[in-house]
Image (cartoon, rainbow, N blue to C red):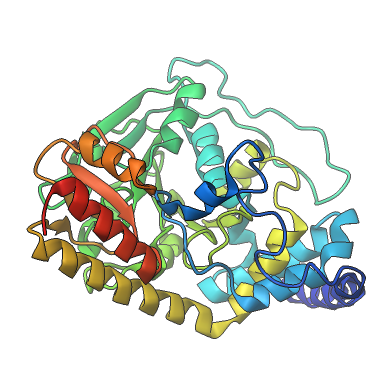
Length: 409
């Protein structure tokens, strides 16, 4: 049944997409990336020249943008904006399932992986004193199949310190206790202490980790997943998976088949260059996916993100090229910093964490005054500065400003 549904969806999608091609003729000015509103145009109060001159290395974005195939797909799909995205969702889910070697009912697409983190916090964390533990029946939906019953979340949120922090606020909104566990001396997650602190709830592991760009070794990850009790959910955020090159790193998606409490989040924001489009997904066992669905906004992913995502998955060269460009520019940047006497945490992502050997605030302020934006202060690592790897000219501008602020040749 799943294969039949997927093939029908493809036929519908191809037919719908063909209709959208007329938009490119009707609006020829909207035919290439960057021809819509620039950041300067969206901020009329700012000086366009000053906005354009800012070197933005602060958000771990992919400076090379989406695949040309994704841009073409979006251009051809403008006229589909009046339609709900059901058919497109089916095609995208089917494509992701094949790539990850799972069934379609193990995929949940979302408004960026940020929505995945939010619904996981809602579904699996909350006050343990709550008496509301019985499933709540939900009103049937008019489209998209039956909605599973809602089960209130309960338990602590366990995270590393530092790590990506958005999920902490989601847990706190859900009235859950948040426990921070410092990273190890090698900047990996201290999985033993994290597991010991867990009580039902959810353990969040960002691997590679943001903001440190470090990894937690694959054997340690496997051991945690094997030992964790079924009532404790493990959410592994693999946003930077495509950039990791270490032999000691691996995705844990293949382990999902044996662990109903394992969820892996992925995003199109990084290697696929779609941060502004907001598209992500997670992989888990079907019953775990069903526990997440009641917490998600209906139709939270728009058609443009979907068609761009489908096209990106079909561009076999885009990931390899992006990895290579990031690696080459990162090596250049690290070598220049080391020449000045500054080392970084070994990076397995599209950013680096530079050890300034003194408080980072003066450097952040000095770079900003020179039009260079880098990551904010992370209290757990007050002497380290996070820098996104941009294009080589951007990194040269960063290095020039860095030398000026640091007072080195």
